[in-house]
Amino acid sequence: MPTELAKARIMMHLELVNIPCSRDFTNQIYSRADVPELLDHYINTNIPWAGSPQCQRVSQTWGLTLAVTNPFLMHGIIAFSASHLKLVRPWDEKYSIAAGLHYGLSLKGFAASLGDSVGRENADALFACCYMHAMLAFHNKTPPASPDAKDDDFAWLRLMKGIPILQRTNVLRPHLNRSLWLPVFVESGAFSAETGPLPEPPQPQIAAFLEIEILRFQCDVRPGEDNEDNPYSTPLVHLDRLSRMNIDSTKIGTLMVFIGRMPEAYVVLLEKMDVRAMKILMHWCDFASQVEQWWCQRPAREEAERLRKVIGEREVMMTPESLA
Image 1 (cartoon, rainbow, N blue to C red):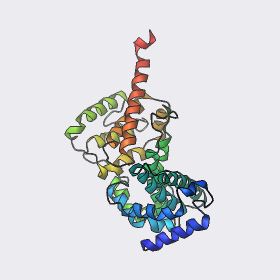
Image 2 (cartoon, rainbow, N blue to C red; image 1 turned 180 degrees about the horizontal axis):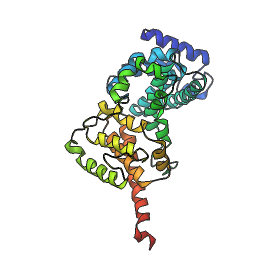
Image 3 (cartoon, rainbow, N blue to C red; image 1 turned 180 degrees about the vertical axis):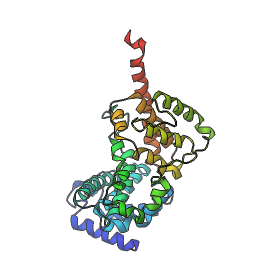
């Protein structure tokens, strides 16, 4: 569908449902007249800003067309664009209002669609929204300095696990090889169970590589043995792969596979503040912080620092000196 036609149909839909509400006091700051700017920003931004190269290409090529018939994606696109502009132009309150309004509507609509109808007709829109929700979940995670921050808050991780859950949905499996998102799935290595021969770690990653080897020993993950029942095993396998790469925007898919393949038992360990589980996630955050994108770098650095602080406090509590 031509871009201008898609934009016109989106504007018609927003007018029909009266979003943003014409009688709301915030209308003086953010109104429907601002939406074309947000849509244009989404499709025309040409720096790396919306995931991996393939993810950004598919999103910007097909996003508005898919959004015309899937309001949850329409709201997700507007929220994503507004969230980015909120960082670029923090003095303009309309972006903050738009980001909050449309993100909430996108989450609500996405959940309703999962409950009502999932099939090939809306599969690509669901995948598109999942990718955006994953990035926004990381960007919107509670900052460690916030009074609302909690040491055991890993809810953002669960919000980032949507893509593999959709991929495993029986009704969507036949669609995967025909999906617009197939290049993104392939780019991430999500379809590959084998890691293949692994290269030596590049010089900047040597220290992390050695720490991961120590963690493997501490977590009783034995090379060449069946570690299937060990909740640390799969995260460590993917962390090892990351330690052998130069991390940049082209590796975002591989970073997200780490999140997607986290066993539930490992997430539970995180929520129980297990030190070894937190150390693994801390290293992942260190790698993610090397991605120079607005939704990723700052939250990854903050989370890595937070985890180091929490781990340090808990390790002190476990030392014999603390029991004296």
